[in-house]
Every structure is written in C-alpha cells, then in structure tokens.
Length: 398
Image 1 (spheres, rainbow, N blue to C red):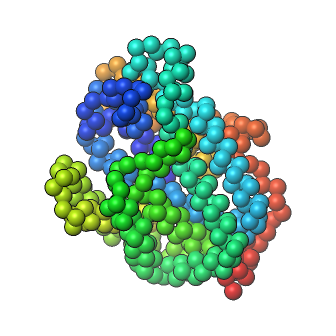
Image 2 (image 1 turned 90 degrees about the horizontal axis):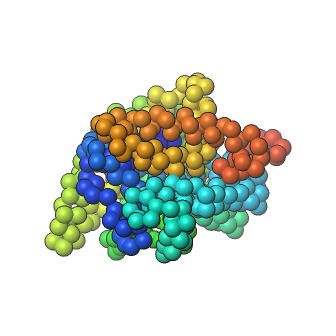
C-alpha cells in the first residue's frame, strides 16, 4: 500500500490531462490542493495509473486499518484503545496540519504569488477559508471511525462477534465475501454519488473528506474489522485460503471494471447536463464494482506474491505510518526542483519516487528513536502485558 501511495503522489505533477496549472493561490477553485506542481513534461500513461489507483486505494487503506481493531480491542480494552488511537492518529495529524503541509504547499505558492516571501506566504496561508491537510485527511477520518467503533462495541459488544462470524467462512468462500462487500459498498456509495457531486469535497477548517465516498469508506473499514475479528490467519487472508488463487480472475475483473467506469465517466463528465439518471446510476455502480475488484485484487496479489520473508518488506511495514505522514512534503519539493530539468515525465516521476521513498523511510526510522519524535509520526510504546489475543477473540465469538 505505501509503495503504491508514494508512487501515486510522485506521478501527480506529470498527468497528461492537467493542461494548465492553478491560476491563483487565494481564490477558488484551489486547484493546487490536488496538483501543487504541474510540470511541463507530462504523460497520459500516468493518468491511467493514477485513476486506477484512485478507484480503490483509500478504500483499501480503511480496510487494512480496520483489520487490527478487533485484536487491539481484545488486548487493550475500549478506553485504552481509544486513548492510544487518539495519540497515534491525532498527533501526526496535528503535526502534519501545522508543520508538514505548510512546508509542502510553499512551492505551489511560489509559482502563483507575486511575492514569494515567507511572510507573504504566511499571511496568504492564514487567510485561506480552510486549513489544507493534503493526504493526512485520512488520519482524522480514520480516528473518527475508530472512536465510533469503540463506542459501538462498548454499547453493543455482540456486534464485534457478529462481524467476525460474517467473515469466518471467507477463506473457503471468498466469492461470497466479495459480493457482500460489493453490494454493501454500492449501497453506501450510489445514493450519495447521485444526490451530491461525486467529485466534491467537504472542507471545513482542518476537516476534509470526499462527500460521495464517506459511507463507502465506512463499509470497507467495517469489512476490515470483520476480517480481523475472526482472526486474520483464519479468514479471508488465511495463508492457504482461496483468495490468493483467484488473483487472475480478480485482475481481469478489475481491468474490466476500470474500463467500464472510465467509459461512463467520460460520458457523464463531458456532457453532465445531458447524462440521464440511468447513466449516472451506472456510473456510480461501476465505481463501486471497480473499487471492490481493486481492493480484493490487491489483497489477493499480496497473499500470492508477497507472502515471503523479506527484511526490506518488514522494514517498510514497520514504518508505513511514518512514511505516510512524512512523504508528501518531499514529493512536492522534488517535483518543484525538477520543473526546469529537461527530462521525460517518466524519468522525473521515477527520480521523485526513488529519492523520496528511501529518504522518508530513513527519516521515519530515525524519528522512532526518541519518544517525542516517534509520537509525531504515530508511534507509541505498547507497555501492556502480553495477552493471548486469539483466545480472547475466540471466547468473544462464542
């Protein structure tokens, strides 16, 4: 996930469809929020890649985050779980909001403002009608989901066991799980996509999320919780389950879903006033399908090809949250530094990725060496006593 995410942001400056950069820093539309840097060298191949990633990456991240809710609740209890989630997600969100994102946005301001000085930038930044938070909007929304889950499981503890039973047969019957995920995701996404702008974002102060995808993310977070509740090693992601063997079918389904969504998107975006309601419904349904296929494909591919012992993957895995928090600012600055370099877009994106990934990995490793800096990237010491997690989960499920 973190490799795909960093590569996604490394390509954003070089999309062929981004014809012109933002024209103003302090007046809407604030296009620099999505595209801080727009390079003169661009390639449409990055559009295909980034659109495919955008269809499922955030849903996958909420799913993966939900996987560890049940084991953590069983080991720590509701109050400690909520307190540690508040520290682990809230602290890096604030660190990003007030330190890292202003640093990341400064190159975009320098390209747009007549006065590129820091004082003028600070005044323009404070005058914005919102607080830019870049990709760290995921952290506050995940924190909200986690707190909500804690409250639900405290009031209705049987819900956790019920979710675990839903996913208990997913190792032998992943198709049933897939269709359940698809239907639930469609029910969460389609009504909001039809009632609201499917591309619109809610922006109030530091809080940002995409209107149409909110309930979809709830569904995938809950799906992750259900898989984790029955035991990661026994459910959908069981080492010898059927999901890994289905990756070719999922790859074909994901490609088909992507093509269908792309065609419907072209029809509804280019002529939105003439798009009839059935076409808009199919457009929304195709997104739900492409999202479910993409998430399950990534999980199946990881189980099929990534279930190996690797020190490199272990190092990336243990520093994933740190890389997520730290990577955005150096990505934007690297893209800014390469603007006048006469290289093809592919070379520039590759340079950004190959420099930013090891740099942020190294920074995350160093920041984990002290308690304060570790907390800034979401790492906290777990001083709890060892608990037989699987046994407690089994007893909670009856």
